[in-house]
Length: 229
Length: 174
Image 1 (cartoon, rainbow over the protein chains, first blue to last red):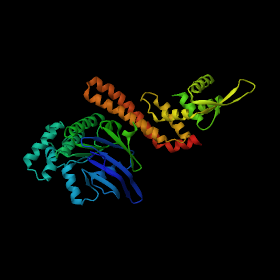
Image 2: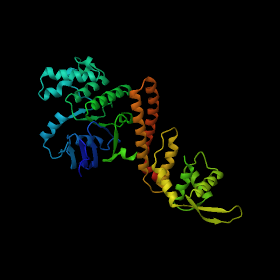
Image 3: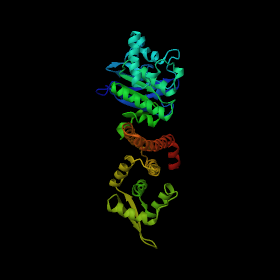
Image 4: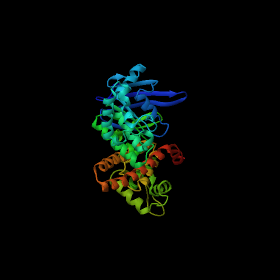
């Protein structure tokens, strides 16, 4: 099966088992540039495995994943790592910032790892921190900022390389409603203005409401809810 | 809740007299609000007039004549359409949704589909409210938040019900 026309990332017939457990059982997925798609489902439904497969972190047992016309499942580890560094951004629920580095150094880190000079990397990092309204925290270390602030720093870091695709796995899971909401507003605004697509894994409907559409994963199978309304 | 659609759905398993319909309705759906005979007969005459049921037979007894009703093809299509249409999110939505679910299970339709369609409709509403909240002032935010929290509660009920669908099927078809 070919990817839907114009899609940035498309997956078809994904299967993945861990021993006797079937995590994905023919899951489908597609996302267009600049689109925010929520992936929902109960605990253990396979949504995290789906995200890991889509991001090239885990290789499915069978099925295809096409990113911008290239087949992800047949790439070498090195090719997939290069793709993740240059094209993808990641935001997780916990523990993403390096505690020994300041916030601006954390945000600049992906650029530094790609070989950008320190000054230039930190200038770009500060610009993103400003958009996420955390530029005043630049010289603080992660241990000195609140959970909500830390998460916004993490979003800035995920976007600093101008990724075309952002993977956010329960990005507000550890935050209260007000902070979670602010993170979602800033995350989706920033991603949309950069035309980055967002794969948003969440179990919270109020977070999913920031997406353009949602798919639900149950027992390793996905369902595109947009087709139901 | 649409009594007409519910009675139509109950007729899908076979023709019934008005009295049987009332009994089946009360048993499945009328826990705290049993139907009045008058409601059954006025609903059945409306369904008859609209071609959704036909009189399948008349029994003469000691009292008034007893009509037996059967659902028509148009009636089945009408039930089908009603089940597939999501409800407008509003308070006390659950009683209508519960009725739809039980009818779907009784008539061997896909009850999970009804829950998913409703869920998609709820999320569509939540998106509209979230967008309005982002663009609005504090008053908009407070009004939208109130609605969002209620929709979220409905969604949690939908999810829990989806997880309990197998048990509900067993209970209903027992």
